[in-house]
Image (tube, rainbow, N blue to C red):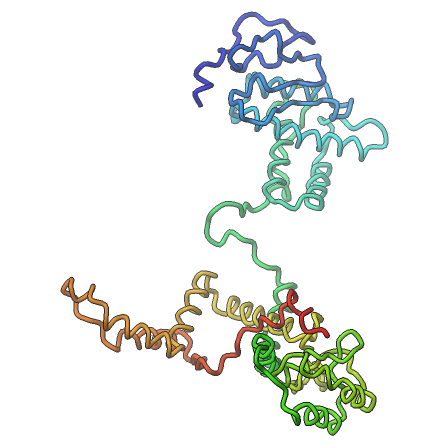
Length: 439
C-alpha cells in the first residue's frame, strides 16, 4: 500500500489524440515510469504493468488481437474510457485487475457474436432481446459458476452504459430481459440456495423412504454379519485352525447347495479364513479339500454373505444377495452408504432442520444412548473440584438424564437404540480396501 503514496500522479497536460493517445494517461504510474514508455491507443497490445502499483501483482495486459476485427475499434474506445474516464452515471472507476476481467468477458462475448454470424458479426446497436437471450443460454450451458455468469453479463451491460461515448453500443439495457438476472446465492446468507426441483426431489424422497422402511432391515443384517468378518482379518497373530472347522464349513456349503465364495474366478480363501476366524495361510494346506468341494457345488461369481434379502420389490426379492468383497451396487459397503444417505434425505426433508442442527441433535442422541459416556460424565462431574470451589452445587444424576430426556422428546416415535444394537462401522466394505479380500 505504501507504493501508491510514491506513485507518479496522473498526467494532466494536453494529450495527443487518435492513434498516439497514451491509454494510461489518466492513471497513476509506478515510480520511475514515464508516460512516454506506456502503450498507445493504436497498439493492439496494451501493457498495464505501469499502472499496477503493487509490484507483487501478476502482470496484466489487454491483447486486442483476441477481439474480432469487426469489434476491435469499439473495444479500444470502451477500454480507454474504462482506464481514463469520463464514466457515465452509475459506473464507478475500476481497478486495473477488474478492467482486465471485463476485457476477458467482453472478448468472449464478441467472439460469440462473430462465430454465430455467417459473415461479419452484427453491429451491437442492431442486437435485439432474443440475441442476448441466446447469449444468456449459451453461458448457462458453458459456464458452471453462477458468479462467473453474472460477471460476464455485467461486462456486457457496459456496452449499454457507455453507448453515448462509443460508436457502437447496445440500444437497450439487458437487465430488463426476463431471463437475464439469476438469483444470487453466493456469499453468506440464510436460505439462499435454490430449491431442488420437484421432479428431482420426488423420486429421491420416494426411494429414500423405500430404503429406510423396506430395505433397512436387510442391509443392517448384512452389516452386522460383515463387521466381525472384518474384525477377524485384523487379528491374525496367534490364531490356528481347528481340525474340524474347515470340513464343517465346507459340508455346510455342500448341504445347502451353495457355491463357494469367489473372487476373480477363484475360491476366496481370505473370506473362508475370516469365516473361520483364522488367517488365510491356515487353510491353504487344505486346498485339495476345498477344490473337491468346489467341483461339487461350484464357485460363485462373488463373495456373498449368508444374510439373504427378505424385502420384496414388485413381488420379487429386491436383491439376490449381499456381496462382501465387491464394489458394485449389491456390495454391503455400497448399500450401507446408500442407507445412510437415504436416512439423511428423509430427515432433512421431513424435519426442515439445518445441517448443523441435525448434526448437533445426532451427537446428543449418540451420547445419551451410550451408557459408557454417561458413566464417564457422572464420574468426571463427581471428581471435578472446580465447580464446588466456585460455590456452585455439584451436579446430580438428573444432569445426565436430562440430555437423554431431551433427545427422546425431540423424536417421541423413534427412541434411541441401545449401543449394542448399532452395527459397527463397515470400514471393511469401503472401496479403497475391498481389494484386501481377494485371494
